[in-house]
Length: 231
Image: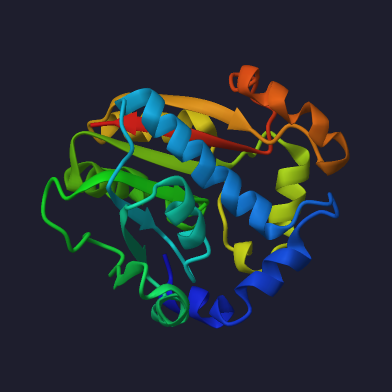
């Protein structure tokens, strides 16, 4: 997780991402919202309640904040990132709704058992593979007993995903992670029965088929996937 690497994209993050997306008809907001919406549904199903204290691990400029406020009303949101410039931008936009905290890339500056939910959206492919278990260990440490981690990642088995990542400037050093590998890392970090679900099977012009995706989560062809892991 290189602070300088992300600082240089912070002021043009949204525009860079929009230019890198395939011309599917969906905008950046769609991809940001669906992850938080899915996470809210997963939290209710797996823990039986809506999380109150939430960490967004690798929050960048805080693009997910409005969706957390919508799908987790009343939550206490902490946005964490290695990029100080991104945090400054995020705080200027959403400082009244979330706390923005710097991550030194090593240890989460929070006590054990501090959060009900830790969310991470396409962050781990920017971190060295040999550090994945370490970061998941830290996430496990700061979660309450019974707390939930939900980690979204790009699926390297999907050709369109691989092409999109290849042409995205801030993904130039990305190393895509196979779902079973991230699942294994979560189990090694002490989580209980990490599970995988696949998402984003249909492009915009087939969006009327998207309700079928809830029955397709085991099919490893989606553009992205999530790993859920409970403490």
